[in-house]
Image (cartoon, rainbow, N blue to C red):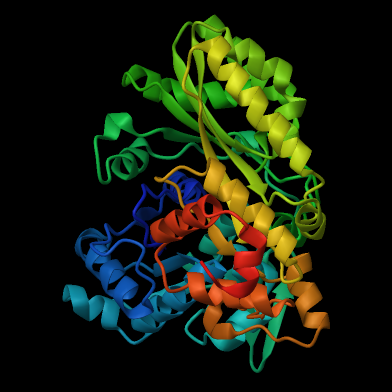
Length: 477
C-alpha cells in the first residue's frame, strides 16, 4: 500500500478547503493506503511567490513524512489551477530534487501526480513544461485516481488507465477520462480535515461547513472555466446533483456536533430549484436547524423565488447568504460576458432579496461576484455602469475582480488566441491582454496602484464627485 500526500497549494486569508482532495483522501484510505492532506497555515496569507508557498508546504509536510509507512511507494498529488501552477511546479521540483525531504530530515523523492483544472484542460503543455510531474490526472479524479494508485503501488505502468496523461519518450500519451463518477458514491470527507479548515483564523463554530451538493453549470459565461473543465472531463454541460439523502448524510455528523451553518458547495445549485426545496423539506422533517449559504447565478435566484420564499418562512431552515455572480451592470458588458442577464435582472434580484430580508426577518448576506473591467472590449459607458454598481452595492469587507482573466480553453481565452495573443506558461497559461479602449486600459493601470479595499473607496469617491464618465475620460479622479 502506498503513502499518499495530497497538496492544496492555495495561499488564502480565508478558510480554504478542497473537497476534491478530501474525497481522494477518503478513497485512498478506504483502499488501505496511508493518506494525508497537506493544507499549510500560511503566515503571509494571499502570498503569490511560488518559493514561499513551497516552503510553507514543506513545513506542513514534514510531520507527515515522519509517520508515514516506511518501505512503501510515496505518491505526491498536487491540485493545479492556473493560479497555483507556478507553486505546483516548484513543489514538484523540490520533491524530485529531494528538497522536500531534506527540509524534514527525511528521504523523500515521490512519484508526483498533477490534477485539477489546468492539467485537465492542457495536459500536454503542462507535462512538457513541468518535467517533475510524472503523471496528470484528467477531469473528475474519483474513479481515475484509485486505479492509478493501484498500478503505481504494484509497480505497473498505468498506460491503460482512463483519464491519465503520461510521458512516453518524447511523446505525451493521453487516455481520455471515462464516464463521470456517481456523486452519491463519492466518500464523504474526514471531519478532521473540515474541522481543521473551519478553525483557521477564528472561532471554528462560526465557520460554515462545506457540503458538496452538485457539479457542473448550464451557463455560458465566456470567462469561466467550469464548463470547459467538465466538457474536457467527459461530463458535458449541465448540472449533476447528489441525492437529498446523501446530502443529509453529510450534514448529520455536524448536526451531532451542534453545528448548524452549512455552505452548499456547488457550481449552480439553484439551476434546479426543486433540489433546494426538497432539501429544505427533508431538513424540516429531520427536525434540526440549518443556516444555509450557497452560490448562484442572478437569473437562477429569480427562477427559485418561490423556493426561497418558502425557506424564508421556515422555522428550521434559514437562508444566511448567497454568493451571486452579477459580474457586470451594463447590457453590453453582460452580452460580451455571455451571462444571459441584463442590468434589469440585477435590479430585480436585489429588490427581491431586500423584500425577502424584510419578510423573513433574517439579514441575508450577499457576496458580490463582480468584474469591474468585465471584458477586453468594454466601452467607457460600460465601465461607468460597473463603477456605479460597485460603489452602490459592494460592502467594504468584500473584494471583487478588477479585470476578467482569460483562463485556458474558455471562450474568452479562445477569442484572444484568434486575435494572435499567446498564453504565458508562467501565469498558468492565462493570456495577458490590453483593453480595446485606451482609456479603459489607463483606468486599470491607475487602479492597479491601489489595494482592493482602496479601490472601492476610490470608486465611491468617483461616483460622489459626479460626472463620472467625463472624469474617467479625463483622468480627473
